[in-house]
Length: 423
Ligand code: GDP
Ligand code: IMO
Ligand code: MG
Image (cartoon, rainbow, N blue to C red; front, top):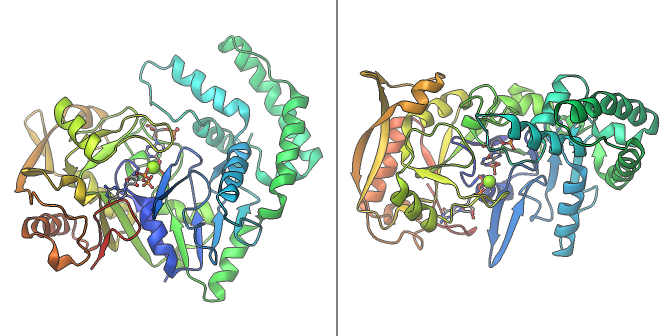
């Protein structure tokens, strides 16, 4: 059965590690949204890989990786990523990696616009500065340049001219920034197109044909449910549908062909960038968990904000993603704690909120209602069987399971490939 790995918090749940493990049992792994704002870490032996656009399954030589149409592709970043992986000994040709012809292209002006727009906002989002928002804006605004356009000089010429015609005015008149030179970008992007050509195809047709041929597909979510453009803590979100709903529009695989959904959750919560975070720790505990969990962004290196597990958001995520299984990641980070808390509701102005609220004021000012659970105060990193986990750890996992009403199938107890318990 085809399956999705989706982030059920604010990203960085450990999706990369999980995908690396699950990709062993599938034929094809597909990214369906986001761009190189994502940073997915895979650690095999003593080698660490951080994937931004290339699916995290590329380490498995017999498997095919696909970048779907819902992804926004910075060709320069993608080529650098491919070159970097080749240097590390991986073979990445058109047989291993396929890129959707109708994915949209991140242009140099998107990255600059991302930064200029942030600069003008009083309520900053804390974007990764990778041009993701402006690129998706152009897609929806019907101004976007797609991967296939890079292969057609006439089409690229007309589209780029139209874009620069409008954008140069905005850059100069609104932001007092520079004019972009048409011919420089035009030549550079035609070259990118030629270099990417061996990988480009109609990936929707490819995937549907593979499904007909009984191949198994894993859909790799980027970001997380609360960074989703529709369901996240808007406007402090990314610009794509990170939820499982994004799989269909982002790959052309219909909903009838998706079976399992694994919701990835940390055993606590983190967030990088601005925006509400009801269970965020105070300064001291924030620093403690950040250092135990090495909570620094895989893309930007920014320190991640940390907090207790929030069952209010997790329950919402499980619902809208249709999770069939949970993966609880980074349990080992809690190993030394005496007491662990879980938020089961929020309280704001005397009212109890059992469900996630779309009201930014509630999310920003609500106080979580916590349950306290005893810690296990012993290392779980060597444990590979559920029954061998300390009783308090099992109680914690089973409490999460009860709150979310979905079985926990995977428990991750370290960053390496084999540091996992499969129930
Ligand atoms: P992703 O964006 O969801 O793929 O997650 P990231 O790779 O950005 O962040 C997860 C971080 O946690 C990475 O540094 C992983 O190596 C690490 N990690 C994943 N699972 C575990 C785990 O079970 N325990 C510990 N200690 N680290 C983990
Ligand atoms: P992975 O796939 C965590 C956050 C940014 C910012 C907001 C908008 O590794 O889980 P953007 O550049 O997308 O316009 O930024 O979204 N963000 C992420 N946070 N993990 C990610 O990806 C993220 N991708 C974007 O920090 O708050
Ligand atoms: Mg990440």
